[in-house]
Image (cartoon, rainbow, N blue to C red; front, side, top):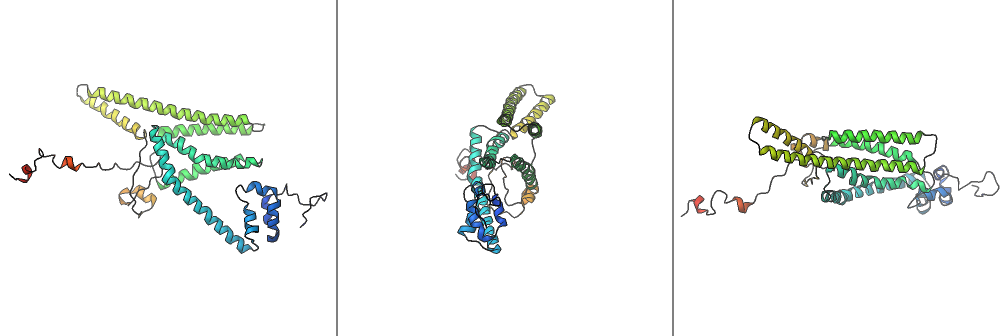
Length: 326
């Protein structure tokens, strides 16, 4: 292998060579190329995996390479499981408590706290190629499509739930608007400028303003319905009044359903059925799983019984009256 970079037109230009082209060379030459190719330092953010495989581990055969890649895959899966456990045991409860303290509804918490928590790591990962002057916006678009179609489809399949028609239609319309704005910016006969990026960020800020305005309007409507119900109860009894009260109470119940965060408590029993089977037949499941803020509502927990207060509820406190003693 010719390592010179002088005036020879056939010399290897390591500054223009792709790091993935190392795989086309023999195993004995890959270690030296992993240190000389400049792109390998850019592609590998924390550790140069090519150097790890072909220099530290000294892989010289195909079977050794496959075994090493298998262990790396196991390590990646272990990290994913560890992160998911940390998120489930610490991150999600913390977000729920923050949402409760801030008086957020389940939907607002999902579109702000949970959405930012899910997208910030992905946004940082998508900004890594900017350092190598090779940004790819298509990666972000592909990730968004995967999250919407695959993630949303899997959740709806495993745990069907009733969606809020008003919020769903509003978000779909705003998603269409965002896609149209993005298409307009990309199809112009000009390059993407920092001003275009600011436009997209402003579009998201307007979305946050929209959902918070909707939340304020919902709370005003709830307070107005409560006042109307109280005023209706003070009117003279009639069938028309009772009908209006039932109608307003049903509307109030639907509005309050997504008004605040609910902490779902489930037991630690082993599951005997699949996730989908448990959602279709909850009574046959030994344990129900909560999949976040957008799951179906569990049945209400049984109220606690105050034994000191209820055991003398049928007497004046003298047990001899009940037992027949003197």
